Each structure stands twice: as structure tokens, then as C-alpha cells.
Length: 306
Image 1 (spheres, one colour):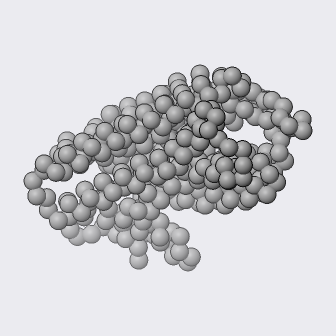
Image 2 (cartoon, helix red, strand yellow):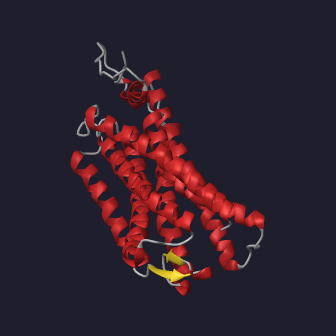
Image 3 (cartoon, one colour):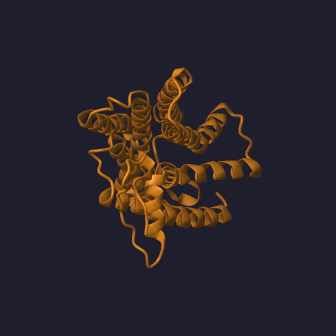
């Protein structure tokens, strides 16, 4: 990667870390102070996804230092830890997103019998245990190596295992989650087409939840699919070694690292019940308060700021 790419990447990645840490801090503040997780089964899965994305953000400063120095300065042991946590957090975020899609579809399709607290906990545990199980074999060969100009690199595996690892990650970290999310979205779409006329408030909340599911799936695909396609092109020998391809790889890599910032925007800042608190908390000299309303409110309208 040319020097200009390294500086630009480090600058943009630093901005991503700052924005992401602020957004996730706000998310954790909202869920800690204003949200009763036991009353809303979906929220614990949103927290799970936020934790996974936050771990990814905390790893970025080490990558920034390595990119600026064009070498991995943290040693072989931390290289293994870094690569493992990076892949583990990605898997945990993707599988938590699957659990969110399952829960959202369930709540909309069966509002009278939402998933129990124990089932939500079971889905959370399953997401993280499954992430651990798929990450360990994919990162067991992580090591440091020597690149051009005797620079130390932190690589996810030996070169002859590289594309086997990429294929496994594509299947387990991308294709499987997308299929699960698409299945739940299709079930929800069929249900909405066949369901009788809903009330205006119920229809609005259902439509908003559906749009957020669509945004989440679209952003996940937009940030990760181009990168996998390019890596497969390299493997098949279809990649040209010119500036346009370098710029394309650079852009796809930035999309990968930008992904942890997207989920708080979709699931918190686009949801009215969270957005009101987030907006008030962000304003200087103003603190958010929760004011109960006299009449029952929709789930997205339980917060107000005065």
C-alpha cells in the first residue's frame, strides 16, 4: 500500500474510531439508564451486537499504528490475540444480527406471545458460543511473517491456507447470516401480505421495524460482500495489479472497518424511543429525562426530552 494510502487509511480509520466509540458509549448509556431489558427481549440482543462492534472498534488503534509504521510492532502473541478478537467480534456481531432478525419477526408475527426471557438469553449465548467455535479453527494458524523490505506482518494464516480461510469466512461470517436474515425477512413479508388490516399505529411500528431490518441487511452486505468478491477475484487471477484495483481494495477495506459504526445508527438513532434520549443527551447543557405519558404509547415513543 503506497504511503498516501497508509496516511489516508489511518486518518479515516481514526475518525471511524472516534465516531464509533462516541456512538457506542451513547448506546450503552441509553440501555443502562433508560431501557428495561427484561421488558423488551430485543434489547438484550441489540446490546450483544453493540458489544461485539465495540470490541472491533477498540482493536482499530493497533491497526492504525501498524499501518502508519508499515510493520506489525506488537509481537507474535498479540498478533494471534488481535486476529482472533477481530474475527470473533465480527462473527458475534453477525450472529447477534441473526438473533435480532429472528426476534423482530417473532414479535411482529406473534405479538401476543413474544419470546421468553430465557429464550432471548439462550439466543445470546448461542450467538457468542457459535462465534467462538467458528473463529478458533479459522485463526489457529495466525502468525507473524516477513514482507517486502523485511517488514513484519500479522497474517491470519499461512499463505497456502489463505483462500481456504477466506472461503470459510465468506460461508460462516457472511453467507450464513445473510440467509438467516433473508429467511426471517421473507417470512415477515409473507405474513404482512396475508395479515388483516392493522391499526394505524401498529402498521406504522411494523413498517418501521421492517425498514430497519432491511437497512441492517443491506448495510451488512454493502460493507462485506464487495471485499469478499475482490478477494475471490484475486484468487481466480482476475485482479489486475493497477491503481484502480488498489483503490477498489482500499475502499472495500474502509467499508469493513466502517461497519461497526452502522448498527448503532440503524437500531438506536433511527428508533424514535432511543433517538429522543440520544438527541437530548448529545445537546450541551441539557439532560434527558423520561416522562411517562397518560396514554399507552407505541414502543418507539416512550422517551421524551424537556
